[in-house]
Each structure stands twice: as C-alpha cells, then as structure tokens.
Amino acid sequence: MAPVVHSTHRVFVTGATGFVGRSIIHALRTEGYTVRCLVRRGSERDLHGFGAIERVEGDVMAPDSLAPAISGCDTAIHLVGIIREYPSRRVTFDRVHVDGTVNVLAAAAGAGVRRFLHMSALGTRPGARSRYHQTKWAAEEAVRDSALPWTIFRPSIIYGRGDEFVSMLAGMVRRLPVVPVIGDGTHRVQPIPVEQVADGFVRAIDAPAAIKQTFEVGGPDAVSIVQLLDEIGAALGRRRVLKAHVPLGLMRVMSRLFHRVPSFPITPDQLLMLEENSTCDPTAFFTTLGLTPIPLAAGLRRTLG
Image 1: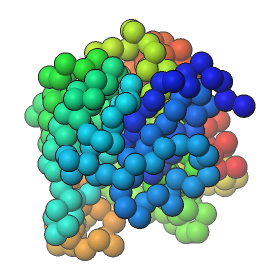
Image 2: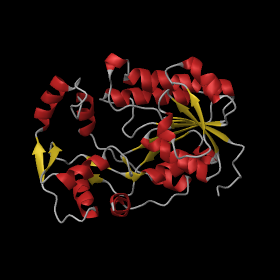
Image 3: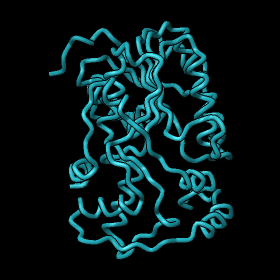
C-alpha cells in the first residue's frame, strides 16, 4: 500500500505517456502523491495499469487547455520533448520545446504551482550546434526567467525496459551477426537507469537544496558507443559483438537526402549530436537527492536479463 504522507499533494505531469513519464508516475504513486496526467485525445490507453491517477485532456501546444488541467496542482513536472521534427505536422523543436514550455510555465504560474521540475538534456548550452540543444536551451532560459521555484534536469542516455536507444541496440545485438556503428563509435555517453531519473524527480519535489538548481544527470560509467555495445552483449551473454563502421561522411549525405522520410533512422541534427560526447559529473544529482549510482553492467543485466 502506498504511503499517505503526500496524498494531498497533487502533481501535474506532462509527457506522462512517454518512457520516462510512466516511470515517474510509478515513483510518484509509490510515494503516495496524487498524480494528474496531461494526455492528448487517444493517448489515455497508454496509461492503463496505473490505478488511481487523474487523466485530463489537453496539449502543451493548446494554452487554453492547460489552465483547467493544472488547476489545483501543487507541483508541475514538464517532460514533453521530441528528438525529431515533423514540420508537415507542425511538430518542430521551436514549437514543442520552447512554445510548449512557455505555455506550461504560464499555466503553472496562474494556478499557483509551488514547484516546477523541467526535463532538459545533457549538452544543452548557449551556442549549441544542434537545433535540438538550441531549443532546449531556450526552454531552460524560460524556466529560469520564471518566478516559480524550479529545478532543471539534463540527463544523458536514459535506459530501461521500453526505452528507444539501448533497447534498439540490444535488439540489433540479438538479431544481427554484425552491428552497424556510425563513425568510429568513440562518441561517449553516460547511461543511467530510468528508475533513478524518476526517483530524482520525485525526491526533488521536497528538497529545498534542489530549488534553482540545474542537475547534470548520468550514471557512474562513461562509455563509448563501441563499449556500450560490448556491455550490452555481455548482459545478453554474448562473448563478442562484431561491428561494422559506417563512415560519418556517408551518413551525413544520406541523412540530408532522406531525413524527411520518417523511416530513415537518423537526421542531420541527430548526427551533429553524435559528434559530441554526452558525459558529465553527476555528483550533485546523486548527493543532493540522496541516490546511489548503479553501475552500468549491473543496470544492463537487470534491464536486459
């Protein structure tokens, strides 16, 4: 049975139907919070199995839908983001990351929300090369400029059952005799289990030391993509993972030609991000929020085993 200590504290969650969102809902419910999820029409089915959570219809791109949705909430957790644009559907980094965040901030301020937790991304900074990171920075600036007591999280790769990246790599390791790697595979990442990210968000709600802090979030192990494939192989019981390197220049040309084809696996903007490391010093995240880092090998065994 969930604790009741937080039962009168209502938490509003955007992006609730996503991979991280579902894990945060679970963590909130475990701690006894009342959870209200913003859902777009037709996406309610993605939250089946969560029991007594509130579902309200709305969209971060529809400001008029947000005020009634967030009314009566004490904390807002804003998770909505995209990794790929679909301009024909008006799904762009500017609209989703920047305009969407501004809309949620306005609704939260109008509702008297007392805490605002914002999901950003590692690599977000002024002058970033990718549009993804540029718009994430603009969203962060909007959060920092607000009068709300905010906390920003910038994670590296988040993994767990149902994630998009590590699960994709694991699928290739399972099915393919040789796994393709873009470029030389030396790009470094710092994967962290989704449960730890979720616990960090939930603990930040009642942590005064987290207010007006930007946490860079990653696991204790920074590895290259080649090393990550080897770690995944070990977790799956493979003695060796064979790899074939695809020249980065070829992928640049291909991505420019086919990036508007939804089935093409990578865009020019994503390639720019692949040329940068996604690593950090996560000490402040773990110490401030009272979390113990989980080694990558152990986390992968638990996820993939």
